[in-house]
Amino acid sequence: MIEQEAKIITKWINQEAEVGNMLPKTAEDVREEIVAGDGVVFYQNGQDGQVEEKQPVAYCRILVWPEAGVEVGSLVVEPESRRQGHGSKAMAETVGKAKARYPGKTIFALTENPKSTALVEKIGGKPLSKDQLPQEVWDLCTKPGSECRHSQEFPDCPCVPFDLTNLEDKEE
Image (cartoon, rainbow, N blue to C red):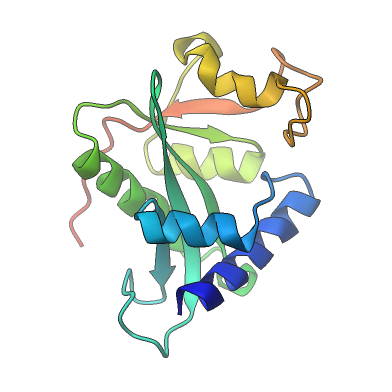
């Protein structure tokens, strides 16, 4: 089941990457994130890896940075299921998982496009200035061969950092 989910999610991610909304990933990247517990798959009725007949509707992942804290990102929603609250729910639940797994760490997100920025603001993310995150986060943009489409623009990179550390836990 994980292999199939990874293929489906990778298709969504790479469709968004083609239009510049996120960085591309391979199915192996997504599979490894899921197996490690850092990639979280969401289904129509919530997170449930045990029910095989359900299809994924959203995906989000956790990335630990040694100096910066924990990034919640790679949020993608199945194209036909967008604008139904799945992205907000997936982001909020992944933040909750990050808080539980890494207590005391700063939780943050980087947005690359206006839709992502609006979603993170909607769930209560607080904008950060770029200098509030250590250089390790921005090295992705500046290293040779980077897939970041903004690499030539740094430090004027349009990616917007948000602090998610103090989001309130939502009761379902």
